[in-house]
Length: 290
Image (tube, rainbow, N blue to C red; front, side, top):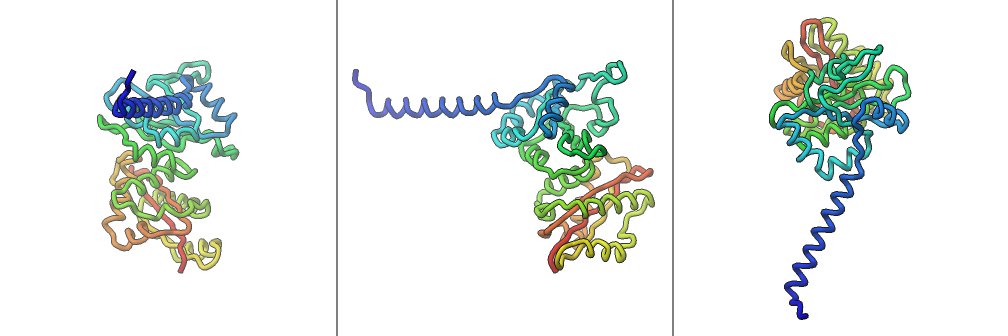
């Protein structure tokens, strides 16, 4: 039998494509998604990993998210660092011997009862932080989430729900400000938490007592690093993610604030808190060389 060179090339290309398909299928099969909340928590606790929970429904957005985002090669590689669970939006867990819809629990309140991604931290041994829900991103309408958004969500630094949501909003800004390219430092995270809480308590945005706080922070920073601060507020009644996006937009409209948010920093911290007036108050503190 005579086989032409062209036929051999076509055969080789076919085998190559089949090989890539096999690799892709192998990568997909490596990810294990728990379908039970309790077993997922047990696995995450045992492995000291963060738990990604994908709450799904029958919507077009969920279908697109599963077929286009969760199958992305880079997203799958990042998901490999987590314990994974895929649960219906109507999934229940037993609390005090009563079945309770998971998304109705206060811990998942910022999912607003909708399909999307939540992340629970089982890596932190501190009792106050262990098992805290540190990310809540619903699919936001028929378009759902993008691959880029999911990659940002899966690479956020350890921190609280509000800290990580604000960092997400900064990183997703179209101009790609550089303030979060440094190290998310606990000292600055704590200071942003305190000042955001203070603004929310006062229901007043501003750099309150910055002169004294500046010297206190500077004294705890290594070398000749100097702290700078930005503040912002949302519109009343905005949801968490929308409020974070609005605060970043507010910084963009101020040349001084945007210069700080856009610049490279050695260390950074971000946080936001909601006042009784329904307004979210955001703070960013950065440490950079003189």
